[in-house]
Image (cartoon, rainbow, N blue to C red; front, side, top):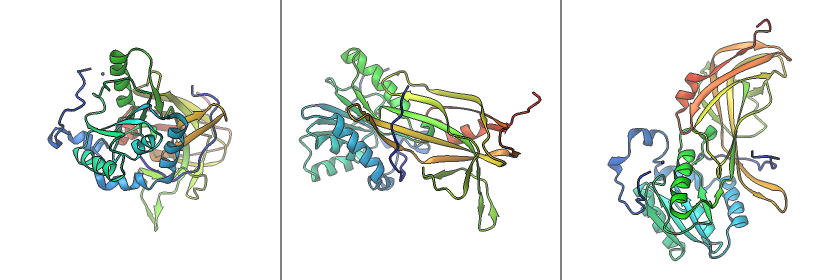
Length: 323
């Protein structure tokens, strides 16, 4: 649910779990662990304003839903929040099951659905999305628990668990997933960490725009994972690669970029995309480098894991030309 302000990106040529359902189980605040609260699985109502007012996020999902949803379809939204994405499907004529774990958001979504006159089309279900199994087949699944690098939030785990339970209940054919894919990328950079003359290299988020005057790129974006949500979803990422440096200067950070392909219009051969905010992580030992030299990059983390764990794994250095 990480929000951003962005510009639509062009299409990519290739994109290349098990107790019974508890759809109507009461889930108390006391059962939510501190880790879940810390890692973004229990997002307070106050923060949902940022998602509602993010025109690029809402617009991308609106376009994708209008492309894929038809009257009479059954749509499931996993992690429905305030219900805005469910409302987009309902306005296309679908019957929507909106699954949300946070009891405060369940009550809020039900009120908003009623106030918008959509209570006959949207059912807000108080359940853990990792445990939910619909009682009838589904045409489209919407799940926006996205964070740069698939960190913090549980997009990967929720969809993987849903697919496993769904196929047990309804057979091998899967519904369409929105988003369809996520492309995870990284690149070495120089980032100015000077603030009013105070040097403070710390993790930071950055809007996915080309105009970043405090950032200098030292290599092209390098994809390290292309995830199609209707296929097997990796739960671990381990990267060791060398990239070519394109300019002389000092490298002091690694930038993570995630492009989400919400859907693809096959008729127009255009992708509907929405990028998360970029994540800039300072490296332990900055170094100077020249154009044409190679930069060694190494890191590892788990899907849904913490930024701190990722930071501890990062190793970035100039390749030894004599090695």
